[in-house]
Length: 135
Image 1 (cartoon, rainbow, N blue to C red):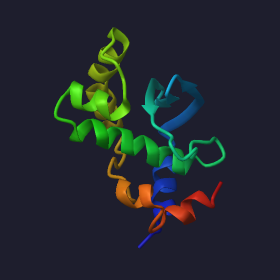
Image 2: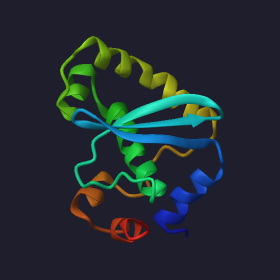
Image 3: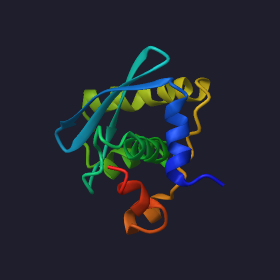
Image 4: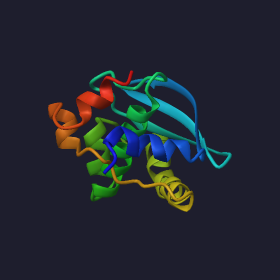
């Protein structure tokens, strides 16, 4: 069975995701990337300063957590509270764009299930230390 790092790296090695830029956007990190030449972006909470161009596997894992948070939220209010975001026009537009992004990723045959649970990530348990060492 492949390690979490190998699993994430295998997804990136498919070549359908190209990271373009990583930069802060207020309280959140914005990750710009393309999927099969279609531009996309995600807002990520990087409470552990893990997002880096030096470890795109870890950055991809955090992207998967952002997708998982959206999928598990009951509605925009619940989702926005998770990120401490106001319900501004920009936030609402971003939230409404997420189903199209998820479809784009699924159509690219990417596995959107994080190989490390958010609980383990938060506690620093399991494979997360090995993944962080890849920086």
